[in-house]
Image (cartoon, rainbow, N blue to C red):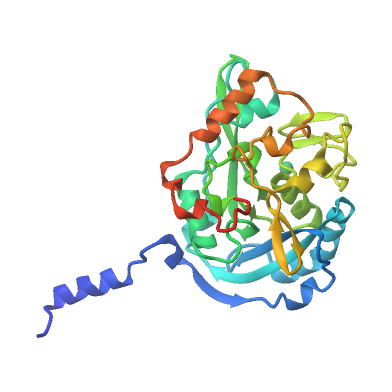
Length: 332
Ligand SMILES: [Zn+2]
């Protein structure tokens, strides 16, 4: 029986509609990464990196390959090696190339520490979450336990600032890279999106890549030797401060950055051919998560810690999905 033209058209339209964000991603090519991991050593702390470069994004694969040796050198003294697990070129809808800033509540009045102020409520804008879900995919390799660099043309970030009238205002600005770190998002971000770092500048300097990896893996903001965390600060030495430094300092003096890095649930060791990940976060990965016991530079006032713990429990309902369960108890 022949379909009426109208029905046939409707049917065709329905068939062509993407069923999920993932379907809106067109895979163009894989880059060959086989020669990039030859120097890796078994039984050393390792982080898997996936690169999702986009046709209209600014970052070129050749640039990444060129920056890789220096990027690796930055993490070497801390005993951490970087493995390029995959790299691909994709095409994403044009609208995905402009991401709205994440949102959070204004800092609590009583909060006195930096991480107490900013660690309790940040979450992705729904549109951003959809883009990341589309790019990372559901079953993609290492979705839950790896870092995913995603090239997006324009990514805005947001933060609260207090005006002279005492009222909090939400400020936004563009970023060259954004790391969506656990100390801000805890597990208010879906598990398989926790590794996302966006890259918006074509230069993709080794130091920028390392700095963003630092936010994710060391799980700190902008801080260093003799410097308390701040939204923005500059200095000559430390990786986690704006500038040219690449040092990842250790001990109390270094705010335990090196030790925190080595605890990161994104890291694993290969023992007898099997990957053994560091233990996962116990409280979603906020700055004072118990996996860092003794490795934080300041004790939070009790109420402040309670607030970030509470924020951790205040997760998105949509997160009650299988992607939170990691098969072998690996990091989330
Ligand atoms: Zn930064």
